[in-house]
Length: 223
Image (cartoon, rainbow, N blue to C red; front, side):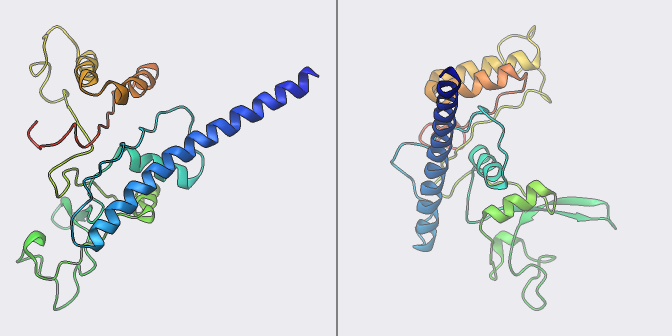
């Protein structure tokens, strides 16, 4: 009898976990759909007035490719109509990022040696897709993110104390990791419901905090 009850309770927990995952995925897909539709109408990314999607917290390790891509896109969000891609010049020993473009190095069309990508009349920037992210995670290529959206809002708030030491924080006696948690506490006062679970998860694994906030909270690039 107890064995059957335990099995049912285990099944319930599995279904509840799956439903939670589906909520995150649905919210992500709805937001992505709004942005794609806005781009199709040449209106720029949708500003979005609905509730922001929940942050993917490390409640369990994603196992499928789809889950890993969804988690990555939920944490590193930016423009979906264009993304930067790493280029390397072994001969000169240089490297950098430039917008991924369908016309790159097309003879008679691309003249990136003379014209900046942002000023090129033949722009054919490629959008962010799940396949782009999966290839990045597999090491096929390296891509970045343009965090500032076209309407000057942003999904992310980042602080880096590694290069500047502790001078940008409150107390010179604090070490960089503790400073980051002080910074996280300040952010939590701005958006407590969005930070609490993520902060708890990062603290338990001794990882620096990664915080995603609603775009309305992060509006304005200089705040």
